[in-house]
Length: 319
Image 1 (tube, rainbow, N blue to C red):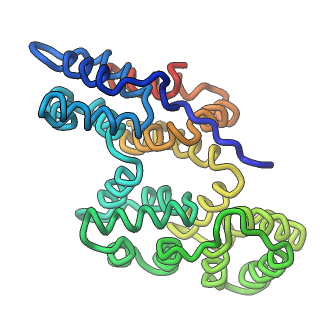
Image 2: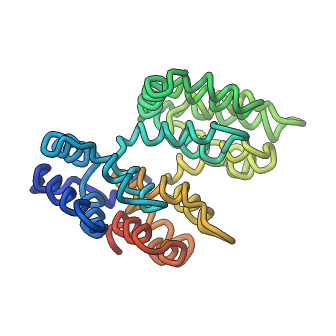
């Protein structure tokens, strides 16, 4: 089944960056802030259009739009709006950096960002990360992770994956046999084989490998990973498998976990809604409802409030 991503945010047409920047300035000038106007404009423009508004705003008013937004907004609502104003690759780099800053490492965030990308997307992130932080992503990641998990992420970050669409049915059969021999067919697990195949093959190729694996072993690759691996490596492998089969289901599950139980993981909620809005947030919405039998909007509505809630719901297409 071919995955057809449905975005919730598309470029608006007709588009007038000058008019939008005037409206935003008026919304922030004087006493009080018109949050509704800010939401109406910024959640319905594409990222490229927002960048045009930002540069027009600077030309017209000699002011930095992001600085003005930061001084007028606050809390989680500010996080959503500033996220929208940041070019996507740079936004993901910030989240990678935050996941590795300070004490401890947020492996879930590293896995979510790194294991879901094609080689082309990975190259862009690696380049932007080093430009922004003056240190190679692979180097920083190596100092923050360990073991087979570190090895897998290093392979992904160094961009060894075949180009999107690369498939070789014969090779898929061989790879399935190698995975079987490295896992179920032996005592213990040869993680290096799993890492190599999962990090090198294109997602289309992995889809074939998983089919062949089931044919050969009588069980799914998920079952094998469950038996053979634990902790971060298990989670990273499962993320890869889910993204090969249905990226929308993977992100729907991440959103559910972010809102499940006591408290909300707002950082993950905001990151996924903002970063996937122009890619496949519509598909994620559909999958969320299919898997959990409730709409993503109703889940977000019950976990958030105020302008923060309004901004997220607007990004979902207001439904």
